[in-house]
Image 1 (spheres, helix red, strand yellow):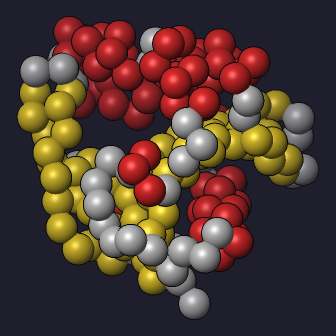
Image 2: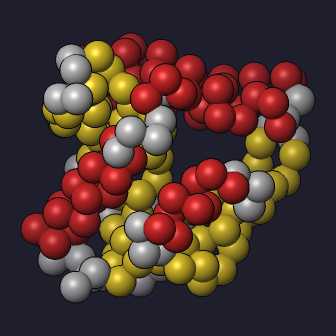
Length: 172
């Protein structure tokens, strides 16, 4: 499989929006009410919100392609763009989503390796992320990639308060 990674720019916002809605829905629809899921999607993935995120100099997005087919994306945050303050020398992996058809083929590993590379290049010594406490596949993947559980925070899925585990990886 040929893997290509491309930085996302504002002109890609509609494609990013479609992919975000698709992958988030595929990942979480079965475990949430349709109303809560739709409320979250309507809030989190508007073109205006995504455009603002893409224009934020402290956030960076990347598309990943498998054999020239769009497979998923990664969002990294530093500084004030981070959703939590996990250290002054940390980078957040806020979103890493892959289409179901390409999961378990090494693309997630490639995206985490990219995050580590970007973190090194920008002088960061830690990567952190939040993962839903009931997302067993993601938790196992992050543990395999060297992340350790250090805390938790609440995440609103519509009107349902949920718990995300905070995971941290110290970089060499």
